[in-house]
Length: 568
Image (tube, rainbow, N blue to C red; front, top):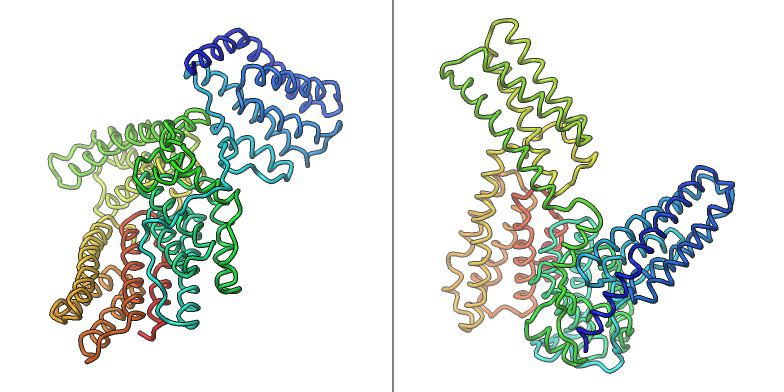
């Protein structure tokens, strides 16, 4: 019956496809004429009429995304007055972009024969934001009645608080700081893996603070969502960032209002948004299936990874195209570096080889100009000019001249490699004129990677040793070699010029020596928890070492805060 319904829907669309495409073209033409002549109220009204006509067609063929997009586009167009000044340009630009995406979506639906209104949600929200309206949540097209909720904390080992009010306050502040560090990492597009781990960690901490109170259900659900996003490598889009900012309000209440804040229920809309992420993940993990089965919902057969891939197709060149482009440019640069290496080694040096290298650089510069990376193209052309000058002077370059040439080629290569992550943007082009810092040395980077690998192994060993220490009724033999191992990490971090991380490692090593090994009495649970939090924060920080992204020093502050809380 479902297949029949889908076939009928597809046939209905085929009957009106040409009319839809023609109407979109007419709407675009009317809008373009109005942009050229802002006094032409007739063109603006024609555009509105065409949009209303499209909305009726989409309603008829049951394309939910197209229907809502046209509805929002009409509202936006009605906000544009005849004779609009330049202050309305943002409205007109957004409307024009929406029509372009709508045309692309019609082509997409015709090819895929599947309606995924979620793909149009970003442009729908762009239309709303241009009108200064609140954007729709990501679960806009997800129909779910969440008033009857399952026990989201079922199966989660939530330890009770052993201390009194003082421990509650300390843990509340620490968990909020953990959540804030994660949120800041998400907003700044830092290491998403670390951010997801921090969110899950803070959510479990808040669930522990709630001690069975109603708000604990939301935190348990958030922990499951964060784990699932990590497992399925789900990205943080604008809607998800807004969701986390909304949740931070409840973290703040736990700190400043206290236990009273944990007694209320989370709103239905928030629970729906979190459950939607589990649905969208497509995960078949038991904890996800258990939550979704409460509403008799199965994980989506159009998971987040597939949604992202289709979205890239719809909205422009995706990472696959950028990666292919980057690899093609790198191949050309590798040939250049091989030729420079031959000259540097003095293996049958030939002045004609200088001309060959210059021609390669000029071809590379022409390609970069086509990509609108003019600064990088300028660097390539400048070096090509030097090579031709050396050939005219009938001499090979001096050693320092050759090194400067190699450094420029490496600078272009570095920018080309970052096209994949940065895109073809002015930020990528600006790398051509920025000075290469010592920290960007290839050899230093290799040293940093070695240190990071050793540090990860040592921190994993430290956590296992402390766990064995606790499980063996505080047998200190498990910790005997731990301070020395951590001090070796300290030396490596100092060597690669990361003194702040080295200081935190030194504090942890000294704390283990003084409070666990040298102490005669068994350590209190707060000390063990603080050490575990500090080691975990360090582990997350180490994950970012050696990457091209900016290191997240907030994680080091989080580790220091954990140690400060118990006087370590």
